[in-house]
Structures are given as C-alpha cells and as structure tokens.
Amino acid sequence: NFTGIGMPKIETPVSRIYAKEVEEMVRELMPEAKEVELDPLCARRGPGTKNPTYSFAVHQDYGLTAEDWPLMDNGFKSRFDEPTVKGFMAVNFWRPVAPMKGPVKKAPLAVCDPGSVKLEDCIGIHIKWDDLGYVKMLGLAHDDEQRWFYYPDMTQDEVLVFKSFQYFKSQAGRPELKTCFHTAFE
Image (tube, rainbow, N blue to C red; front, side, top):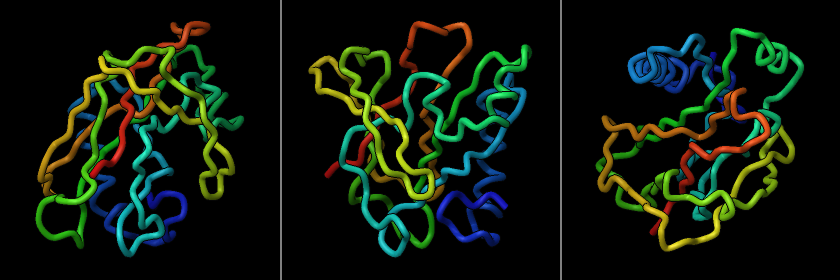
C-alpha cells in the first residue's frame, strides 16, 4: 500500500483513491515517463493530522543533485546508474482532501516560477524529517524579480501539480534549478 512515511500502513484514501488518480495524471502529463513510482514521502497536513501545521517558510523539498535525494540508497543508485535512465523527477500533487468542506480559505499554497529564481538566491538547508533524519532541502532568499502564484479557493476536485525535484545526468557538474519553491501564506 502506498501510504507515505509516518502514515498508517493500512489502506487509506491516499492508497485507495489518490495514488491511482496521481498515476493517471502523471501518465497524461508526462507520457514519455518510462517508470512511475509513488513517493513514500507523502505528507498530509492540517488539523487532526500528524502534521497539523503548514510550512510558512519558502522552501524546495529537495536539493539540486541526485545525491540530495533523501531515498538515495544502493537500490536507487543502481537503478539510477543504468545506461537507459536519463534522470528523474519528483512531482508534487497538492490538493485539499476530505474531511475539508468548502474551498481553501486559510493558508493556501503559493508556488514560485522557477524561471524567476536565481541560483545564487538558493540556500542549502538541512531539515529533520521523521524517520529519515536530516535531509537536504533548499531555502530561498527574496528577490523582487521572483514571480509567485497561488490558486484561490481551491476545492477537493482541483489539483495543483508542480515539480519538487528534477535531475538529469546531462546536467552533471552544473546544477540547474527547474523545480518550484513553495510556501503556505496568510
């Protein structure tokens, strides 16, 4: 069952409903994707959950290189090193879920256009993440040229999709930022 770290190892709406919906969206948005794996770092936030607060700090969930991937173990590394693998990405699917009633009115999610972020404004940070210990993430220094977007009044039938991580072997030795910084805001 796909349940995510820190979530019950039983069938949940995440494993029963959302995982299937996410795979369908990935196949539709990225038909060239050879393999689709659901990220076990799924997090549910909000009142009544293990993560009752929202992150009001601008961040990007991972670093810039393959070594920054928090699940980089020997099994992942051997698959990544295969000659047919060009790279990988993590895609974030953010949506309001039950038992929420009505549209999001408190702490909506904002995303930053990666094309408006200067690499020198990225700040490497380490965050303690449940069972994984400390993981590499990125913070972001403010720049007036950054372009931020949010989707007001999101409902349970809407999904915001954005890249949380992307690394291709062709960029080895020269980091590229093609992922979205994001934050909740008031």
